[in-house]
Image (cartoon, rainbow, N blue to C red):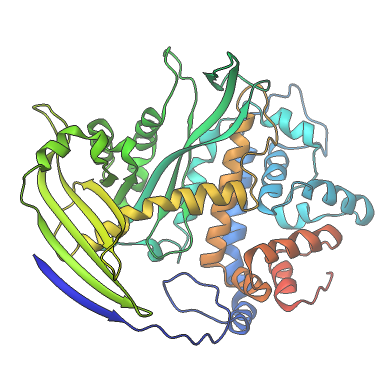
Length: 469
């Protein structure tokens, strides 16, 4: 057993509003504006480069139109970027406003910010994107996390990244459905059609942002009679993306559903390790093995703002994950937190294939608990934070609903990259004091003014001085 005591003093003095994660220096809004003025051209290239890469992918989407296209007609790049723009700008009416600007001024922000030559109608966008392969956009997520300055703040456990996996629904209806819908029967005899996907996000304890990765859609698979599920989607995701992420030495996080041998083995085969929630009620073999066994223990006591918290960690190595001769052996560890009155305020347990010691068990537990960030900082933000993930932007007959979800997730990823790597973006957000106020200004001013480029737009927001080009 090892015991350590830490006393943490916390200053009650707040000097100015901050825009930060817990990593790296924190800059005030004036400092960020000065930095943006010095290198706005250089740093803006990160955002503009990603939009250019998206344009190239959209240009390569299958075009189902027959015959030669008229001069000045809509290209697939115009169609894909127009759909992406409304998610990136956080405005379902963005295209309608830009059409009005184009009619009145002969140009629009779609042209200057997203490099589109024309703005298709909403119905035409839906028609042309229905049937597009969602996998075409997957490399863009990987390129986003490779942007300089983006990945280092997320590294933990000696330079590794944490990837949390979980599933969520984004459409449910008894009337609207397509060939890729899953179904379920309700107690009244009715059939419910729904769409869901397995999400993956790079997370880190103590970090406010997350980096979404390509989704894996839970949909009927060719040659199978049973409906698809999260576990099967997780296996496909690991097989498809494990190799491209192996260089970052990923540690996969998941809830109790993924704490089984097939998923754990797939995570190892993908070149990573795992920390998975392990509930006693659903893991009989692990629970029986723990009964009566002597476990190592480590305690930490922290005094913060006059409140005393004691955290107790226990672990046991070489525990079989299932009752079979070929069972994978893991290390089980738990965390319990007690307040000053010795009342337990938190408890959880995990299994991992990483070595556990008194020196790293606290960090491993913090990493395991970071799994919740895919629920809070990913799905909840996408559904309630302005991205409107569950809104029906268009369902289609084939892949339209899935393509729009991918573009929505990609907009979320580019926003995170902009916060971490584009100083002009940080300056504009800091000038408005809150992210939602920044997007309010972004939506409003692009309704009435056409900006020359992203640097011009963000500088106008940061300085509260709109100067049309």
